[in-house]
Picture 1: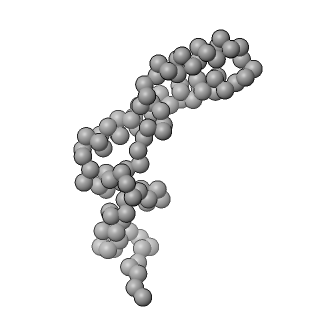
Picture 2: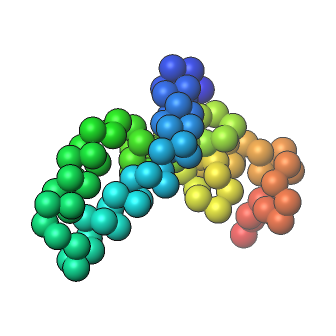
Length: 101
């Protein structure tokens, strides 16, 4: 089980991205638009730098929904390899059958 503080920190980042993500994207579009004057684009860069770092989407860490583990994460099932193996052994994951040969 992951540290509760690490999981909560990641959840806080998700909430911040949800609330401020649209503003960041709008500023990035202004910065990338070459037809705008340089002064406007520079002002957009300054506003973007004032935004909190945790409002960036890239700061969110993929974590297991079951255990909170950050490594060995499967995107499709949204859980770690260890939690997947445990649940699959108990027959909790539909469509997953124990292999034998």
